[in-house]
Length: 397
Image (tube, rainbow, N blue to C red):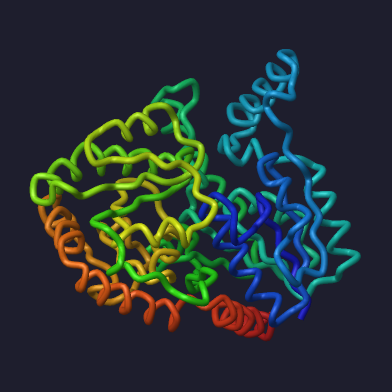
């Protein structure tokens, strides 16, 4: 089977944000079962991966997004005017407007005509606007954000954010029906999209690259970790909650407890959380094994956003138990012990303190996490399930 993948960024298992890690892991599995080509946008920060694409790809072609600081003042003004025109007059959600260019539509057509895929996997909501360019082939649209590609405030106003949410709903209704098959990453997201679209929506199973050898949280000091890309608004929100609300309560019961805040592109406000007692901001960590070796658990409640949390699946794959709320564990079916689900601050505190005070419990729960990950997060298994879904859909065309 020949599969063409269209992505808004360069997927890579070692990328700094969850979407690229997820898609890079999935493509690593997909190339074991099919001939796979990739067309993507390329952010300047991803250029270092361009010479090291996901192993096994038949080819990878990209359109590079410009660095903002490479633009002159006049070019920036023109760029902002164009985005506001698309947002205001054309009715495109702002993030979708930023990723619209006729050059991508032309590239997808040309590559499709040359590669002649059996199916095109269109990844993330902002790529749905290119389905018109792909009508010569069966398409599978995978929505990673339950129909909200990232509502954006205009000039910091709530009015702009509300309009953007309305535009996303219009965008979904206009573009998603053009796909042969629509998928989400969690059952709740699929159910919501089914209600909006009035058609069946599938679910693609979760996936991460699994390390050959897990870590042992029982050997770590009394330390927890949180990580994320801090340009994604739910992550600074969670980091602030952990540092200012949860950790003072944890430290009252376990005075030596430490929380590591890891991840790239943090603002000054997030970095300053590292000045609080028991908090250490470590920034981007290239070696996740080194990070997880230092912790007994991942603490990752979420208070906004949707989709699945790649950080949670990654921690489980390394054998690290996870403490979070229902939103933070959205789409996660791991058993009790591997995950601890709490909505209240006091119960979050109790679970965190228990793992930090009892190395044997952390080790036991870590083994449960790893066993579940091995059974449910394999890239090859997820890819095989996706191909089976595609073949079933093609047979009914």
